[in-house]
Amino acid sequence: MTPYGSFTFFIIIAILLTPTIILGLMGKRFHTYNMVVTILALCLIFSSTHRQALALIIFTVWQVILIKVYIAYRKKANSTVVFYLAVIASILPLAVSKLLPYIVTTNLVGFLGISYLTFKGTQIVMETRDGLIKQDLPLHRLLYFILFFPTISSGPIDRYRRFDKDMDTEISGEQYKHFLYQGINKIFLGFLYKYIIGYAINHYFIAELGYITHSHFQMNLYYMYGYSMYLFFDFAGYSNFAIGVSYLMGIKSPENFNKPFISRNIKDFWNRWHITLSFWFRDYVFMRFVFTVTKKKWIKNRNVTSNLGYIVLFLLMGLWHGLEIQYILYGAYQAFLMVAYNTFERFNKKHKWWPQNKFTHVLSVIITFHFVCFGFYIFSGYFIKGV
Amino acid sequence: MYDKLKQLITNQTVKWFGRFAYYLLILLLLLFMYGFNDASAGTYIYNDF
Picture 1: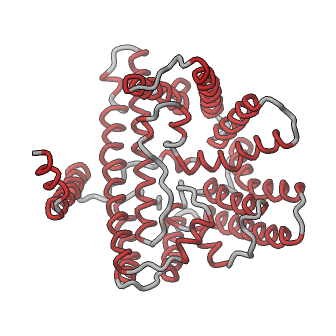
Picture 2: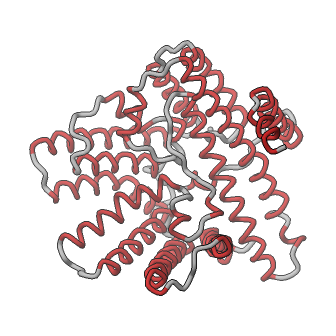
Picture 3: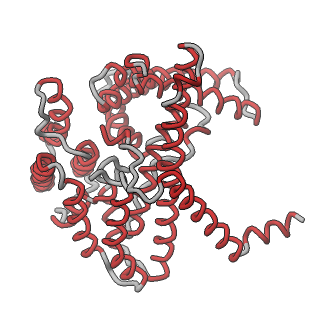
């Protein structure tokens, strides 16, 4: 069963979370019960695909052993080679699952949410290396963090230390009322986004483009804007469901969107769109790349280093979506935009060519919006597959 | 005038009714679009990644 994919799913989750809500309103602890709910929800999600369920179990065992062994090792030593090997081992199942479909017909490794679970696992390895995670993690908490069902299929990507803090926070009945209120609000917003607006765009606009438009160019142009809106309402709708259910369970999963279509520039856009993913790539790819290059003095010019960092980040992000040409082009396009904006920003700091006022602000938003939509047009692969 | 409007918007009862109307509207729209069927609005794009 697809998470948040049908009304039945919501009804089952509402029944399962009723005791959580009652316990929460009474100011009692509910995380142990929520762990049981997570197991039941996972059974529900993966019940129809036993192969995926098995892949999930093997993957989880792999990640847990890896994390435990690396934390134990890190207490005694801190070899860079071991760290790189741990990261590779953490990413390996995801890489194999992405490559397998190009080699064999049955993907035995992949399962729903493998990317997001990998991001969580790798993040723990990275933070252990940085000394941010020092103690051994309790097994039940580690499992609960990795397998937390509201965010299992597509995030948002939480961080272990933040999640752990939520687990330790005592929530009074009065405080839980706010959690409940915010959770319900987000779930309703999710319905509005995914089931009403997203559905309407897809069925009454995108699917009807053949009748609405009069030329190939017009069709592609309309598709570009239609798909951009659809992608946003689809993904933001999902994120609202995931965050809303997390809130009901007393976990404040991080936000994934912050009005991305009013971004002033591409840098601003990536602080507003798929926030947890872009921050993951920023912290664990870009920052580490820039730090290593600067420390080893491979490149002296800081701007060249940061531009190279952006190129590495976005090409990797593109490849993570898949090895199809549209994703690689999408990554390259975003890298180009980022480097171009970075260069422009430096030029403008010196020459004050683009003044800061209300008019230029609105103009910047409009320009960014069109560049972003063109990016989603590439991402959609519509220019390859057509209707 | 502005203060009165501000008072009205921040009034708890008005807020409650506004929120109630908003939720009701969403539920009615869902009912209008899907009826009482176990509808699916299609799979999520990012579930593929």
